[in-house]
Image 1 (cartoon, rainbow, N blue to C red):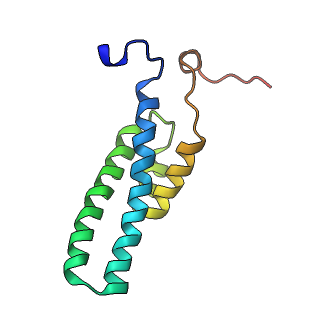
Image 2 (cartoon, rainbow, N blue to C red):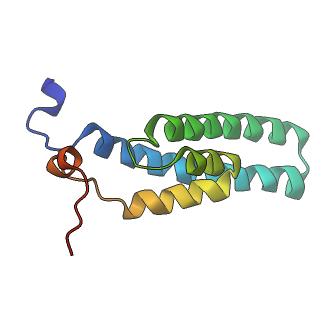
Length: 115
């Protein structure tokens, strides 16, 4: 593929950046929705911000569903972070921030028991 000629990153590594952004947007949009709904009491503002928040939550949930196995997460963890919403998004963000892609040799050979 000419777009990635000479690029040594994997597809999963390229997905991590946008995934982290969606995690932050999910939490920020939730907080904005709470502010508009409870703080301002604006019905129209709540509908607009709620609609945007819904799209971001959907994007977050789909990103979790399509990458949790590649990241080595269990389906229980994936389900929990989607259900818990903004708290789950921050947990995912923290995991992704600390995540390092396993090398291709490590993925082929599997984990070793080295000290």
